[in-house]
Image 1 (spheres, rainbow, N blue to C red):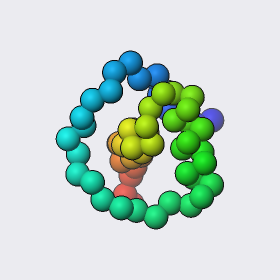
Image 2: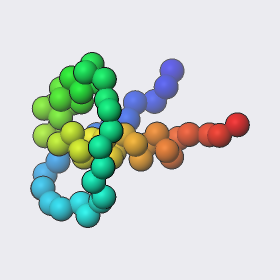
Image 3: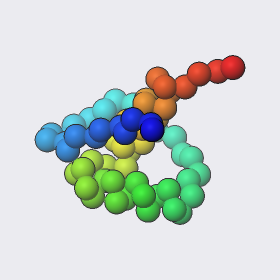
Length: 62
């Protein structure tokens, strides 16, 4: 069984200093992100960064 990524609720809001760019995301994925955002009090942007960082750290190229 895969380990779950734990996302803690956010206490403070601030500038992240990252670059902005556009991507295409499926409607179903946006809905899932919105539910997660509601649950955690984090923005879509914050969640996407957390999820991408996790995915990159846990990826292996073969």
